[in-house]
Image 1 (cartoon, rainbow, N blue to C red):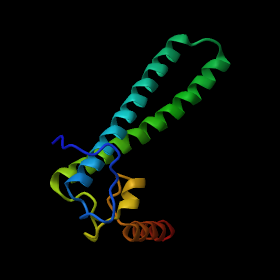
Image 2 (tube, rainbow, N blue to C red):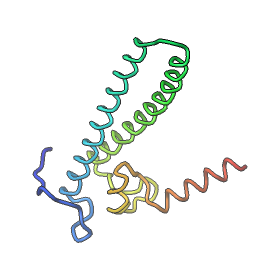
Image 3 (spheres, rainbow, N blue to C red):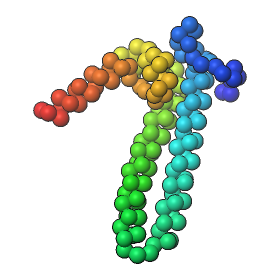
Image 4 (spheres, rainbow, N blue to C red):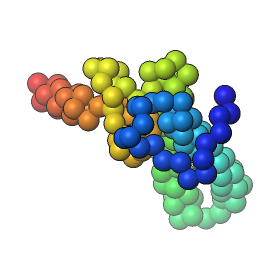
Amino acid sequence: MGMKLPANYRPTKGEPFMNKRQLEYFRRKLLAWRSELLEDYNETRTLLEKGERAGSDFADMASAESDHAQELRTRDRERKLTAKIDQALERIDNGTYGYCTDTGDPIGLARLEARPVASLSIEAQERHEQEEMRGLRG
């Protein structure tokens, strides 16, 4: 795609929702976030590999073990987030980005700015959470 964006461009309510500039803006935001996650992931992997080679006394091993568990949880979260980013990029490509997958309503710029992977409007998100809570109780 590679469309030109003004240096300090920010989506505003005054322009058509999800016009080409907004889509490009969010696409870049998502791609930047994705490469940041991959960088973290690679750093984590390097640290884990170094740690495994360094193995010394028992206390160190126990603490390395809990660090390792923490790292794995972090990597799992990062993997899930990367998948969400990929799905959001897919929605940009197929023209559904920025619209609630439940209702088809615009998600809103403020929400997308705060959470570019959002696929539900605030209302739909809250409804889902309430349904989950009811499901957990029942």
